[in-house]
Length: 130
Image (cartoon, rainbow, N blue to C red; front, top):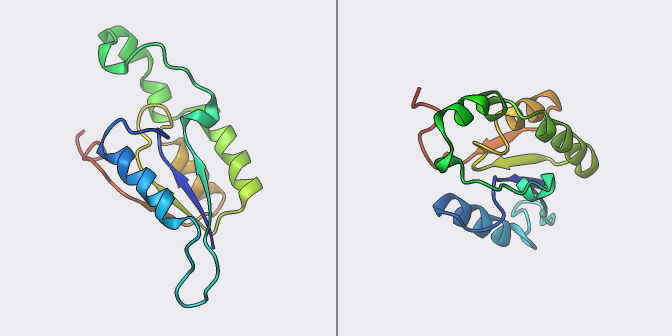
């Protein structure tokens, strides 16, 4: 089974990142119980984008935050790179963790477009806040 794990960070910046990293480590080298098929893991994070954030989004002015809303909802760069990753890796399933901010909801749209079944671990309530 081929599993693509997706998270904003590949380092610990909070609880969601810790869960993501633990999940990656737990799945590596595991076998699917019923078939003894090995689980092959690949990841997609903002380091795949080679993004270097100079500023913490929490410290941005209101105007800068407003300008970033479009990218927050759909990040074109992420969509292109994730599509390439999915076509190369050919996952059986994607496990989505924290995508808000850098990765955006474009992740869900691309996975749906390519017909990749997905599971999302919701670590906070951002989806229902509005």
